[in-house]
Image (tube, rainbow, N blue to C red; front, side, top):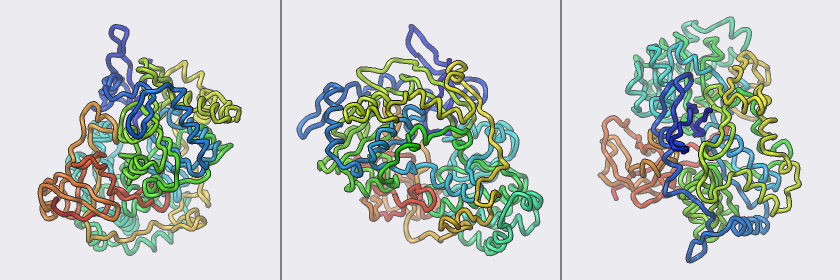
Length: 620
């Protein structure tokens, strides 16, 4: 029996459950690839969460004066009444990757899509990079995990030593050189053979400068360029202005370091492009430019961003998008700002009050009674504390599901390893009961058994549900790297695909403002977004700043969205003009740090630019 961790994480660790006295005691990481016999502090703590005092065990209804435990029937009657009374376009569901199981995350959206409600664009994490890279390659998948142990590696905008520990281990154990590019001194940067610090929002300049240098030295793969690419001459002309002098002036990278990075690329490394890049100023353009370095090198499998699109899993089918569509789609970074457009908000698999930009506005709207907020959740988190209707959900260890990875190519059938507490019910059953109350249970999207939908969805990956259940783990076939579903059928240096959509055909650069602090959010090793605070406590409300930006040990960071009050530490390792808050948390007064984060969507996939949040600082 195997279990795969369902966290929003590259590694997707695979475990053997260990039982003692008939109860799940711990999870043993498999010694084989890809888990390599170890896991992180979060994966090791999941069994502790089964009995967390913050578990939601029974449905709750919150009134003006008190919160009551009620029956499932009563809670769903209240929810269905609110849904029936609202115009579908004024209902929005918010769900994301709190659990990556196909039944937990994707399938429940069927109900809302058939009702014609609003939806988010699922853009908070990786969407910007996916859509940006596709403009040139027609796909966004890349290197298979094993490649990280065969070649030098560049970790670009990714603290792999903290948040991609198995990819980091493969690279380091192989003893091949490692380079890292980031805006702050992360654990990865401090351990890399070649660390490169760039100014926030200027990664695209560095990448285009590398391409120019490769072209100038005639070190590109002319045969690959001729056979498989389009628009090379226009690209050559475009990058000519990204000289080493210009790169140094814009990015702050000294020319000596820049030339070392160029030499590093001539060794044909794997570039791991972090999701963080898409959450920054010019981030989608940076992802485009970084990927094109590998087109120059004739190395179509030389970069890795996310392999979720490589396996052939039909996620759209699971959500019912082949039959029904949402009435409107709202960028995730703008849900808080646009909360007045809705009367009912239904949440599962997410904690938007804490994790979305201006998510505090969702809680404020619920408190005023402007919206009905309902959440299906295992824990009393910030969204549940603000909600009118709270429904208990099981953890991933307490239900059957199918789990994929966006890094490795193992598909895993997860059998339930423990019983959920109290009256926790899985997401698919709640949707079915709601569908009955709303009179849509006979719709084809609701009639189809969830497991049959999973079987349809994974057949594109070359496996049936029956086979997966029998084997437990199936290794999927690697993708074809020489097929490019672009407008020209080639890798497009000059993107006709983009031009036909009214987008810039070449990666563009808009100089970011430099008159304010850039607040950014490197990962905290103890937490996956807002999860595991029940085990490790609240992250400290602390910001680190360069001594030249430090205004005191208590600082208010403020901008047009709001303000937060934090403890501050002067740290000479933090670059000038940058402020660092680890992870996702709150300020000294319990306000979400994301109250000030930037919700402006990127131009390609809509990911908010929250990692380049511009703020001013003053003393408390």
